[in-house]
Length: 265
Ligand SMILES: Nc1ncnc2c1ncn2[C@@H]1O[C@H](COP(=O)(O)OP(=O)(O)OP(=O)(O)O)[C@@H](O)[C@H]1O
Image 1 (cartoon, rainbow, N blue to C red):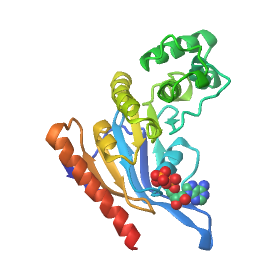
Image 2 (image 1 turned 90 degrees about the vertical axis):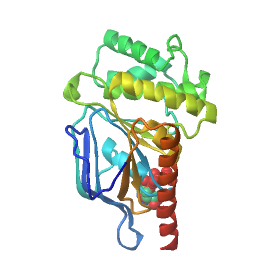
Image 3 (image 1 turned 180 degrees about the horizontal axis):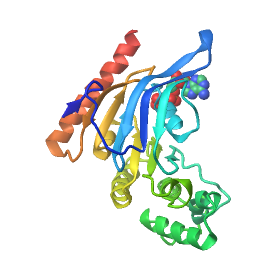
């Protein structure tokens, strides 16, 4: 079931591929090495989850993929339409309606009004918010706002116009459900799996929660404590029952090990 970095899995197309990527913030005595020699690829349509200790560089890694920051060493190969990010907080534009928020990336990409309206309506239906497109963010619950954020990200990454046309889509998710109550989180995890299957987008999903990582991911990638490196991967696609619990226990044990080895350093 397990594969280590020494035996990487060969995949065909990859919306994103890291080659020995490093990221250091600051210089000299104040330098913080966030990531070191990261090799990682996400295949088209694949759901990959990334776990690691607090501060190990998970958000930094997503920011590099999203183009919000640049690596200090190594190389990132992107073969995707615009990667889109869903954050822990929905970060919606408060003055726009739900539909207006979903339309925003399409508007910025120059998509015409009628086409954007149609796409926003389709995506709001996909996230089960049909009929709520005219609500503003403050009129929606936290779970609903995350659904709008997901629809907006899908609008961005699955837009088939412009330079990304025909390329595999990639959704980056940075602990998107961690601020929600347990029941809403459980519902949204199920919804995300349904939407992933319906759209075929690749997803790179960061979480602290190993149970969530195993439930959602086809593959779980563990980063070491800072500096973050890929230390181990688990193929967890389709696991359920006892096999799923065994995987959760094994990954939790490995996570505890990287945390304690860091604490002892
Ligand atoms: N802009 C920045 N300038 C300086 N240091 C930074 C910057 N961004 C991140 N860091 C540092 O890089 C390291 C990795 O941060 P990052 O936010 O990527 O970790 P993380 O794994 O996402 O953490 P958490 O799980 O707690 O959200 C941390 O030590 C952090 O303090």
